[in-house]
Image (cartoon, rainbow, N blue to C red; front, side):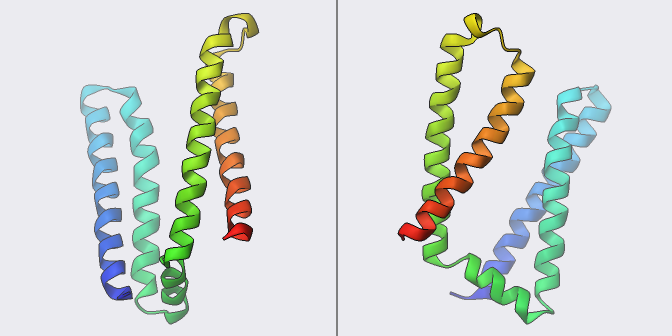
Length: 134
C-alpha cells in the first residue's frame, strides 16, 4: 500500500469533516439552529485533529509507520467486525428499550448517555476478542 496516497486521502476526508463542521456552525449561528452547534462541536475537532496528525506524519516517519499499521487489512477487518457487532447489539438494545421504556420510566437523557457508554464498551470488548481471535 502506498502510504502517501493513503495520507492524501485521509487529508481530504478530514478537510471535508472540518468544512462540514464550519458550515454547521455558520448555519447554526445564522438561522439559530441549536442542534447545528452540536454537529459543529463534533466535526470541527475531529477534522482539525486528523489534519494535524496527517500533516505531522509527513515529517515524522514513526507516525507514518503507525498510520501504515493502522491501515493494514487485518486491523481494518478487526475494527470493521467489532464495529458491526457493536452496532447490532446496540440496535437491539435500543429496540428493547423502546418496547420497555414506559414501565421502566427512564428519561431519554439517561438512556442516551447510557447507550453511548454501552456502545463504546461493547465495541472495545469485541475489538479485544477479535484481536485475539484473528
